[in-house]
Length: 149
Image (cartoon, rainbow, N blue to C red; front, side, top):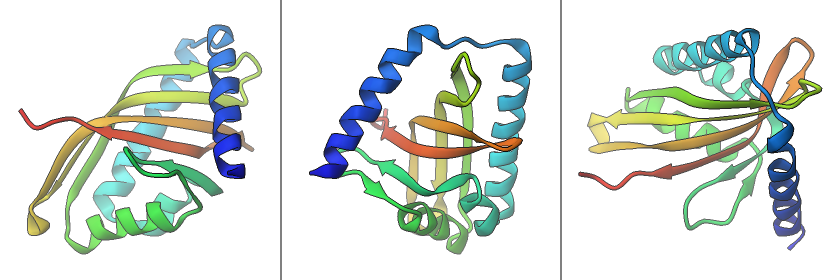
């Protein structure tokens, strides 16, 4: 129940902050580089670098599932892709950066193809990121899978 209340608080805070968020060319370039790095890590199957994109206790929010806190689900999901030599990539369409530049919301699309396991999916993701030193860490990873056409 405490996790549920925390999620509601996070959602309300994010929604309240969105009108104040802005994006500029410098931020666009930084997050394009972040996204490129994400895709390089996925392509090289580097689990350690993948997990380093997250903070120590991110929320993983999947459709029709209770949110899960921690690195177990991202590690297991990416581990499955690595084990089966799948292909996984992100692009992003929307970026919102807080005025104080300590938080960001990144929304885009993902493509997943794991032929060995007969798994293919496309969908939309949303990251909530927090500034950590010179870098960014994913604190919320939420996704939705699109219906096959």
